[in-house]
Image 1: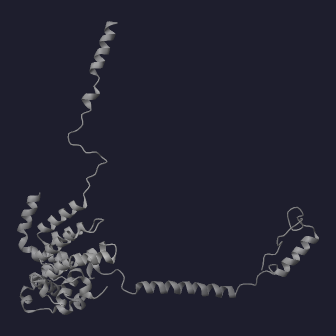
Image 2: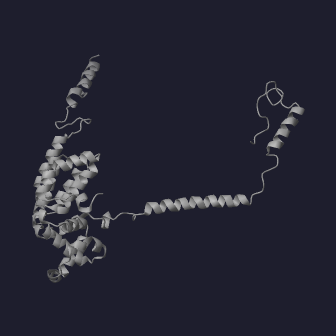
Image 3: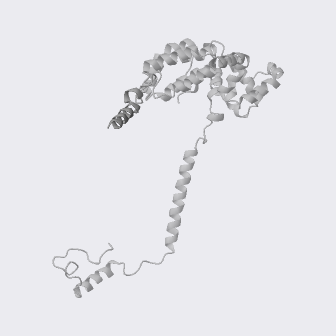
Amino acid sequence: MRPQMLTTVLRAAARPTLAATRVAPALTRPASGHAQETFEQFTDRYVSFFQNAEDLFEVQRGLNNCFAHDLVPAPTVIEAAVRAARRVNDYSTAVRIFEGIKEKVENKQQYQAYLDELKGLRQELGISIKEELYGSS
Amino acid sequence: MQAALRIARSSARPLRATTVRCLATAASPAHAAAASASTTTARKHSVIPLSNVEAQWQTMAQEDKAIVHEQLEELQKKDWKDLSLDEKKAAYYVAFGPHGPRAPISPPGTTLKIFLSTMGLVGAAGVLMLAIRQFAPPPPKTISREWEEASNQRAIEQKMNPITGITSEGYSGKGFVVSK
């Protein structure tokens, strides 16, 4: 009787307690929760990227990334990108940015809205869009 | 890593102006670099008119392309409002025109050519079919309205298929008649 009791007690002591083993790691993230970037955060990120871009390669890399998303970049992003193109002295990239908008928007009205919105910038820097260079297309 | 990259970048700065330009504009940088090394003296004398770059670009020598790149690079440092339309077009064409990796896969008119040749093949197949049918034997004599009606008469004479068929009560089908 006594040895039996002793073994039960010992076994219970040797068994690892659940509370002790189940310690959640300090740095954890639920598997279902992804970091979601809002449109405003995206805009801010790319505006600051283009403002800090130092050379043509970086500007073009940023443009590639920026236009790769399923959205049309906000006019502020476009303005920052065009100014970055001006800073690195590449006219063709500035023209290409407007061509990229034309690809990304859904219809001609949206493209026209972008052109109207950025008209001041185009006149300030003297950028002709591709349609102006090559006639209508 | 970042810091190392920055250092590498800043040390590469003097080269950058030409190499980056070439990277961005899809002229092969190795060639351009070689050309710029060999023709440093020639470049000072030759100025290539930018008005006709688009037409000449495909046949232009590598050295000339490098010269055009340099010209455009200098040009684009100016105020862009001062650029003429030809200069703007040349800058755009050299950087993003339809040459090199952006050359169209099929020349214009290919779609029409493919459509017409497909139609031609279909037409040739039709002609071939008609030609073969010219040599075919005539259809069998039993496939004719007359023969089939005679078959019906014969079937009624023989009281053929009296439960569900041609001689059954209230039969309204066509019997053996299949041809129009």
